[in-house]
Image 1: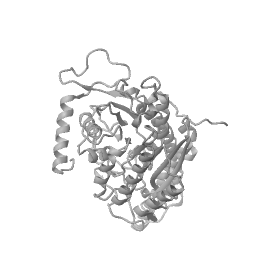
Image 2: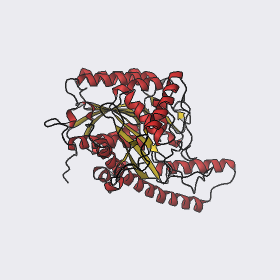
Image 3: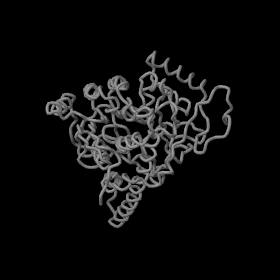
Image 4: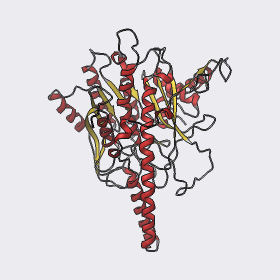
Length: 466
């Protein structure tokens, strides 16, 4: 069957982790982008047997020198002309620095043609209130922010980069405004937010027992690593199976996960939109990588479909593809891209969850039939074997879901809604009729400035967000 890619020919350099088995890091991102028409070249920052949710792994990390050598090999043969750079997990501060040099070199190559190069930075640093990387990587990531066109932090990573504790939509808007204003990041998407009915954010959930806890900052493949940012990217679409892992305390459990995105105006003010997606009762590895990889072709598609900012000028020819200030938040190309991204992901993950459920039902029936031995050692062995079976059954096997990625179903369910910033004297419900599909006005300018002042004080004193 003939297939016309939704985007023009696009060369992408992807710098991220790699696994032999499973779909995380570059193993996920490369196939996803290729399925939508991108020509992908990959530099792998780790080479592991499997991702760390299995609790056991073999392999090696790539040194900063090896990353540079691979890029220099491309450069010496004139193969370093890329339209887009996607960067994910980096194993050391030195690696972050070297990737920054690669990004700046690619930007310099494209400097005579605005809009011809775009850098998507996924700052894979941690989750659940903990860093999964050495602390000396954080300032190196902050140094890269001004170079990137789009960043994709989760809630914890956004707090770390903006020095802002995110507790509600007001503080979240402040974090995004700081990223826009202080670091001049044109586009921001904060992923995997858990919002209560009154728009308060919940802390990132501790991993379930099967998903395991966060890894320490220093571990080698010969250890028994647990969940880590290296190749699990656990920032999205994780919920506990209550039948397996009863909650330790009663809290309001949101039915949805939320992303909040923004494209800065010409004076670097946020244009906020939100999209909610139903939670699924399973832990998935690699969903952050899948989100980033789908966002790239869908953003290119949306930018090419956008109206010309001025007669005869394409949006794709403007630096960072930033829309004119007149474009509403929910109409931004970034919002249009996220709509299709989430539609695809919900379809893929929903089918993966159903497949996993059936496989584990078969597994449990077989275990019951065999009737395993008794004693503590037999119990631990049984738990580990079930954990490995569950982790294997929940792999997001994207090669089976090309149709859902190319033709996302039910796109209308994931329409972006604007999050407004109202003036200090305006009523909560706004003035005039609310446009269909728009979010209620929820953030005041005074709240925004107060939260921003607190963040600036923390940054000045070196105090980390609470």
